[in-house]
Image (cartoon, rainbow over all chains, first blue to last red; front, side, top):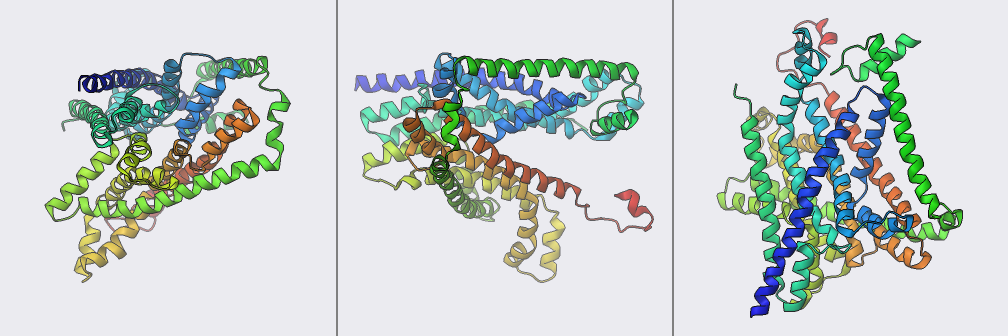
Amino acid sequence: MNAFFEDFGSLADGLGMTLLMLLAAGVGSIVVGALVAVARISPLRILRGAAFVYVQFFINVPLLALLILAVFALPAAGFILPIVPTAIIVLTTYESAYVAEALRSGVNTVPQGQIEAARALGLTFSQSLRLVIVPQAFRAVVQPLGNIMIALALNTSLTAVVGVVELTAHVNKVNLVYAQPVLFYTTGGLVYMGIALIIGLLAGRLERKLAIVR
Amino acid sequence: MKTRNTARAANSIVRIYDEPGPKTRRNMQIGSAVSMLALGALVIAGTAQFAAHGQLDPAKWAPFLSGAVWIYLGAGLLGTLQSAAVVAVLGGILGLFLAFGRMSRSKPIRWISSLYVEVARTVPVLLLIYLMLFGLPQLGINAPTLWKMAIPLTFTTSAVFAEILRAGITNLPSGQLEAALSLGLSRGQAMRFIILPQAARNVSPSLLTQFVSLLKDTTLGYIVAYTDLLYRAQLLTAYLNQLIPTYIVITLVYLAVSGSLTALATHLQKRLDRKPVPAVVPAVLPALEHSAR
């Protein structure tokens, strides 16, 4: 019975790894995604084109195929990193494409009249961007970004397939020992649901904080 | 020539930017040159890295010129499309029921449907697949290979479809249902003939986008040993022992297949956005119609 609880405790290690990847790839994908979104709406055609290709590539290629490519194939071309950083990089690049799309459509929700009005009031480009466009766009992207972070939390489980020992891998391992599928898989599922719930609540709170009171 | 070029360039980004003056235009040219150099350097560095490890050796890529390899991978692509289609149909039907369940007048049905949707959207598919693979056989339940993947995927996809369909139904103007009921249609008839056709058309881009996401998720066939493209690729690497060419080729195949579906979804969305909004107030002057567009 003692060993049983010890193994149950090892689920906590798995949870730690899942949270580490979620945090690292979450922050990373928002930073990279913001850069890609800036490139996507920049006045330079070449940057717009490159950002378009980047977004389309990562939105249309399966994450699992990318993980396998990065972990098993790319070392043959000399791209060698430990497995956890590799997984975090793949998750970051993959989700950043979705973040970039969300940010871009956020900017598109700002009505043209707002931008024209800012210009008519004599605001410079950077002022209208800082004071008019970004605050309104940010409001519109909180919920989509929350959904992307929830998707990221669920997607971290795919790294179990290429050998990262995170929550799903731990659940699986512990179940193979104790053969209590209902207990362990339900526990694992509830933990993921808890993570998603927390992200959802945080996004909701942030959105209310930013809401316009008219 | 020059003015036309700048006018066109400015047109696509007119939403945020001022018309560039001579100074800005020069800065933009410098910026373009710098970014082109940076992107070019990135591509060259990547290619050099591959070349340095002999990954660009034509012999490594030669197998992909033979028809047999493509027939082998084609069977995998067929499996990918088949499993995605099965899940889309089942998930679509289940999703429709769930969408109605969430809008039902009976409280328990609303509650159960909401619970299902919330659970299915926040549990990783992989965990469910492991449950099918390793958990249920311990309890004496063993599903065929396709269903080990299709059941978990249907579970999660149906919840997303339900949310999309529900959004499509609730976003329709309420006057549509009221008009249908006042014409003497029953609730079921109104749903079938008035609400659902419009809702389905409005959410078709989202449904297609979700189908692309589903298509990507069928790579989980790799885990349950169902013959999908990724699983076939893995078997091929065991035979050819060419990891990089194989996985890059199938990545490009996925990109082509889901990329064309994504492009179709974007096209549908653009067409819906262009569709003139039904006028609430009847047009007063025919002459104004042009400017209203």
